[in-house]
Amino acid sequence: MVRIVEADAEIYPLEKKEDICTHIERCGRTCYKSENMITNETAVPFINGILKSGHESVIEHANVIFTMPNIPENRRILTMRDIRGLNISVERDSLTGEDAIVVSGNMRAFRDLARKYDIQDFLLLIGNPLFFIKQDASRAFDGIKLESVQTSRFSELHNYITIHSVCDLGAYKDITRHRLASFSIESTRYCNYAKGKFGSELTMIEPCNIEKGTEMYAEWLKCMNMIEESYMKMAALGGKGDQLRMLLPHSVKADMIMSANITEWKHIFSLRCHQAAHPSVRLIMKKMLNAFYRQWPDFFAEQYREFIGQQ
Ligand SMILES: Cc1cc2nc3c(=O)[nH]c(=O)nc-3n(C[C@H](O)[C@H](O)[C@H](O)COP(=O)(O)OP(=O)(O)OC[C@H]3O[C@@H](n4cnc5c(N)ncnc54)[C@H](O)[C@@H]3O)c2cc1C
Image (cartoon, rainbow, N blue to C red):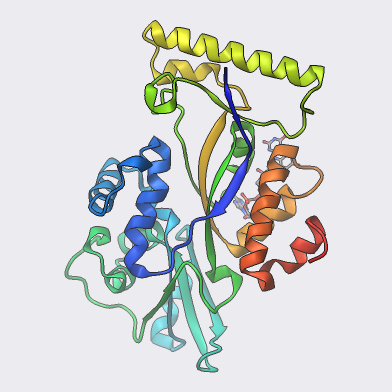
């Protein structure tokens, strides 16, 4: 019998520069469902491995925010907006009352900036040689400061949120269309659910648009169980993950990590909390919006009112 679970979402916080590696490891291990292997020593070798293998999207889940004085020598950063994952603006700093150049983005973007423009300043300030492109680089800008990781006192462009969600394959297929967000998803190729580690069973998300106790629900459940039976039979015949996944339906559960800045999150909510979105996508997106509103009411109050109701 398949296991049935509810869709859910939780915020994965990242508050300190020192936690960048453990945050990345926590996000990246979702792909392999190897979270149980995390110890105090595993983050660096894990990240080394993914960087060497070219699986660099995993480091997109950690974002860093910098400021520098808005002086002519520094303004050439404004021409480097072609680096994906990098956000640059000139904003009034509420601490100093002066305009500052604010540069933020994920670890991958800062590595791409270093590769394309030989701008190493940001990586040097983050200070972890694991991410360096060059060791002995010279500085390109004056007065850069590392302000914070993930969230900041600046605009929504420079505030990032990572979530872990448990949703169905159909929902994540829709959600991963959002190109300005970063994703890591449980791999149906690497995870062989016939193995004891997965309880030798398939896990499905409770369908929110098929009412429990109805004939239609019974038909859905019968089909899910038949799929599981065939999956286990094919596995017993020597089927590999690549072959077994050909059977998986839209209802199958997947763990998904997703990171984006608040500008993109708001765009996604405007499309995916809307009536026109699929009910399973709407359900998971409203859970996220609710969680975000509790933590950042100023940024999300309007959408909370529109899609969820009165505070
Ligand atoms: C109700 C609904 C029904 C849908 N039905 C279908 C369907 O039948 N088939 C289908 O294939 N898809 C479908 N989609 C997916 C949809 O077409 C988009 O791919 C998805 O919603 C991503 O949103 P987005 O393109 O607005 O922006 P994102 O990818 O979230 O990007 C954010 C913004 O960045 C800008 N941007 C990003 N990349 C580019 C780019 N390459 N060029 C120019 N501007 C860019 C745009 O301004 C965009 O609004 C549907 C979506 C919804 C909400």
